[in-house]
Image 1: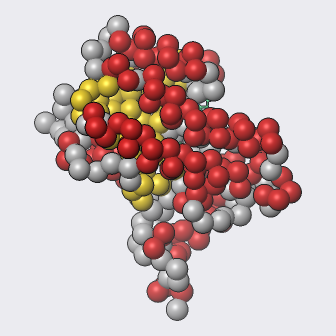
Image 2: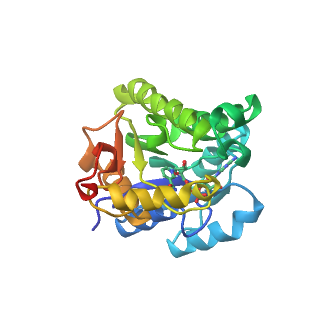
Length: 261
Ligand SMILES: NC(=O)c1ccc[n+]([C@@H]2O[C@H](COP(=O)([O-])OP(=O)(O)OC[C@H]3O[C@@H](n4cnc5c(N)ncnc54)[C@H](O)[C@@H]3O)[C@@H](O)[C@H]2O)c1
């Protein structure tokens, strides 16, 4: 018996076995949750179907996060299989690659700003809206953010602003839904080599710096993020909402590493 036994979870954002969402699905499965997955487009469909069968699920739905009707359709379809949803994972982020390559003052565009905020931040609100009828009374909504929301990093640019917007959204949704017993939190993961992260030009340097400077002198894994998501999805975290939980080997709190002195 795991900490998620009896829970039903829908996970948005698997693109590969390196995806943070894949690490979350793996942990949820180990902890006894039933799982449904979504995929962004036809190119990713068979990969996500493979992941679903690995986690003993045949519930796989298409969803382009820029489309309100796609998001609504996911919950309409899900309702014909499940009478409730206990956990929603939003592990979706995107900005055009030219936005993540150079100083923000040079490369940020109005269009890129709109896209980054639409996909990476607004879609979480739309998912929360569309899930309302199906949400169980103790449901937990979780999104993925990054420290670039509050501190600057080379090339992260418009994604930093989109993550700041997403984190503010977490607090507002937590305030809106808390009265119903529904909790809303974000996990702020340290850098991990995934498809999305590879779009940030300086990823390799970020990984190296993180490993050298974090108190634990390591990078985190998708399994560590997944296990934190299991805790946040479970009733063990019933008093936590509106929070940004860091899974970063302590990097955020460390101005100068002891290892550098
Ligand atoms: N990898 C890191 O270093 C890191 C650190 C902190 C936070 N995050 C966040 O974690 C989340 C997951 O990213 P990841 O690192 O696992 O990379 P990933 O590339 O494996 O996952 C990103 C997901 O976003 C989905 N996506 C993008 N545009 C979409 C759209 N229009 N509609 C539907 N889905 C769309 C992709 O299909 C993919 O599944 C993102 O929000 C990312 O910003 C990543």
